[in-house]
Amino acid sequence: MGLGVEAAFGDSVITTKLDKAVNWARSYSLWPMAFGTACCGIEFMSVAASKHDISRFGAEVVRFSPRQADLMIVAGTISYKQAPILKKIYDQMCEPKWVISMGACACSGGFYDNYTTVQGIDEIIPVDEYVSGCPPRPEAVLDAIIKIQEKAQGDSIVVDRITDFKGFLDV
Image (cartoon, rainbow, N blue to C red; front, side, top):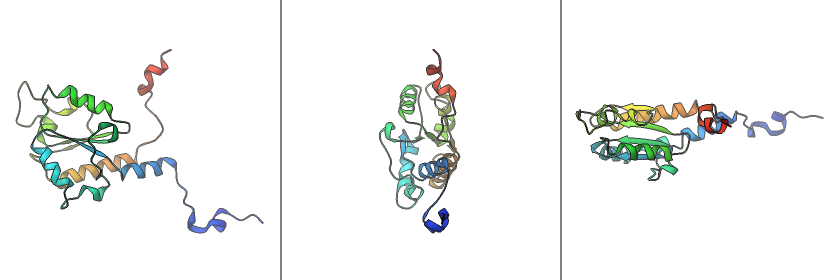
């Protein structure tokens, strides 16, 4: 009288955890925003072009608004004058968000060791993946995107950072 779920529906039902389903969708639908300021910004164009084709990795919808992006690719030299702008743009991105530091200048200031150049964007915003090179090869950027996808699959949709809501807890 009582049929099991498998007997009633066969192979047409898939069961999984909500975290796994959401993270699968997030990892294969990244919406990058390129913050290109120098030569690496130009090099990012070859990553998005047909030969290397960033769209194969689910990141083809390049955004120009931080409110629509979840992956920021900082490509190029960042001066201290640009630092507040970079921080503001990062803060405007919705959670979850990831950052790739692309090229020697974004990672460590490059050969600009002077008073005007930020010696790595990790002084301003958190960085998830570093891509070295001057400029880096497109394959290295694609490798960083794959690593971001792996991180996205390990995330949880449950808010587990109480510090994010610290202001709400203070009564």
